[in-house]
Image 1: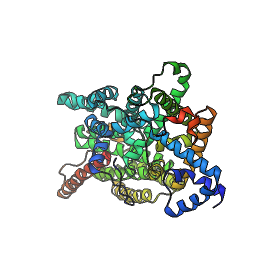
Image 2: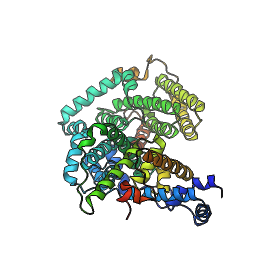
Image 3: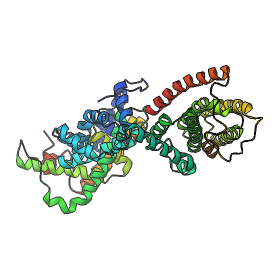
Length: 209
Length: 292
């Protein structure tokens, strides 16, 4: 991931800025190079959030279409990758919420991912817990959801989250603290509590190793 | 550290995001507090669930890009073929577009994109095309003056939204266009055009002063003001032209009385040459601005 040195004002990778400005002017070949650089990142975030490869690819395509259209509004004072994370986070959380709404009708059709290792029961339990966590994140209030998404699905550090959302680090910490407290309450409410006494909770078994 | 305080730091502690000092303080409380140590354990467990989300499978980029490209808006369709047209047809098109711009000046202005609009670069690219294809020096300068007026409209709109950088950028381009058009604006009879630009400029200053009084904007405004004052001094003294607007004035009298002098005096020639060389510098600057 491209990121500026700490403490140094962002001036951007000149090559990347060149690609960005050409893409903003409609140059599809320049845009192709940007997409090539970042598509893995966007797909990976979407897949972690949605747990479905086809859906993750669809959302990532939406993200790049949105980026192509919005590029003329991008201001290079801010690293491109922060901007990309923000657009991705919005698209991914929207998709996650849509998915949770549909889930009632589709639940029975959803297939667990192909199990490559371990006890099938453990795999199923882990899958159920992952799904419960994703769904619970989708139902959090917006600013908790966005912050937590950046940590969990984008795997950003506190510092990177602060820069992406343009909020102080202290706010990141307190939002994450509240978000996770709420998340644990919601998980407990649906009986998926990843508590310490894992022996009595089949759902959390798969996550303990 | 109190229980309430410590609870606020449990997530950073579980995420390994605390300084050594802070970590010691929070852990000091947690070891003595069952509730907090239980909560910390749950948070760590939750982190394990997060870490268990599997990575995505790799995708084939070629087909991924094919699919994306099929859905991209096609700017090439609008731009490439235009340049690929035979020169005569391209000129005819540019003339028609120019005429539409001149006649429908107001409609153009009201519908055109502002600098914070994603379509703005397209609009600017279109302007460059028109300038490139302007048939003679006069129609080019007329167009420059129309565009200068458009830059002021943008600057006013941006200043009203406190977008100082964008307002200043439009004003910078306005000043560049002003310099390019100086030879015409200083012609006797252009005072009305100059006055109109002056009043537009004053409106921008007014809006800017009411919306944060951006210094960059003011600096550009002052530069424009001085240039216009100077142009106005040259232009006054002959008020026979009775134009009602910039666009109509410059657009309809073509080929009659107010053509820029060609070689009427040596000094004017050298002035025109100087303006032209600055013109080239500035158009480069403008297109660089566009690239950004």
